[in-house]
Length: 376
Ligand SMILES: Cc1cc2nc3c(=O)[nH]c(=O)nc-3n(C[C@H](O)[C@H](O)[C@H](O)COP(=O)(O)OP(=O)(O)OC[C@H]3O[C@@H](n4cnc5c(N)ncnc54)[C@H](O)[C@@H]3O)c2cc1C
Image 1 (spheres, rainbow, N blue to C red):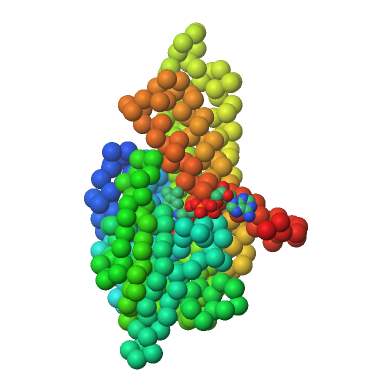
Image 2 (image 1 turned 135 degrees about the vertical axis):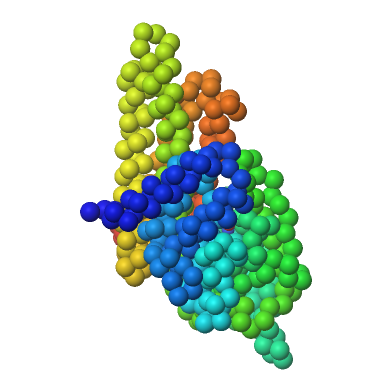
């Protein structure tokens, strides 16, 4: 059995919530309602106000909201990355401060790793953290780009590196930077995306943080980082699958009715088959997403890493194809505002690019899975 009865019930309940909000959703209202129903913290430990489930349950929530046309992008970062990292590696105080709020939606957190000169290559990040020897405070300097939702979250989990990391190897450290900290600036990036969550360029200019802003162990950074990045990939897969399903459902509905010859256009195999293929691709992507979530929740970080990459890849490709074919199915109406599909063409591309591009996943599978040599 791939999904338990509880999972099916969760799917149905979230789908009903999504249906009530629909494509014209108000993000804040939906966020608050989803939080109140326990959906946003479903993966967080019960003792800190969460639902005691895992990424399996959280990905069901995001997929179903997306399939209803109202995806909550911040779920990818706030409960999935930040909540997971704090729950697994935070101090008792950090857990008590952040987790109940992340679970009930009253606190939110963004996640910043990408830098102008370190997109796909996170080994090149230069945001540095230095300790003030007198106070024990951390001083952060650097720049980040494309960080989502910084304006609407209370803090950002920033990936930096310690200044004494001279080996050239990535030695990431994770810091909680509250939104209004002195020296922490943001500028909205002008994106051609019609999403409610905006992207920001961030500047960290001698940002002073207390010693307890560091999450986890300074020397176990990579392991801790991947504890958050695998859920991010799984959740991005859920985001893409949800969006693909939303577009496909609109196209199917249209193809059943629209008649330009003797039969509805859906009877023409040139229309029906690509929609059927899109459905198959989305289902296969979901299967891999479920595998990744299962492995992750079972504590198999290594196995989950490969599956999460594959799920993200499959979902990104399936989403782009489903949206493209859906727009095409509507003919001219596919590009009207009334039918609301055209804006998904750009939105769907996000699941191919972020948080790790399709090429980098192909690289990962080439090297890690197939054992092929590296070109870079
Ligand atoms: C809407 C949106 C939201 C985002 N939100 C966040 C966020 O909240 N936090 C955050 O930290 N980041 C975020 N990002 C950033 C995102 O993770 C990066 O855009 C992504 O990692 C790619 O990095 P890049 O844009 O620098 O592309 P680059 O690394 O410059 O890559 C450009 C192209 O080159 C290809 N390429 C690069 N290296 C190789 C190689 N070795 N082999 C083959 N091809 C290669 C890539 O696949 C890509 O197609 C977001 C991005 C978008 C678009």
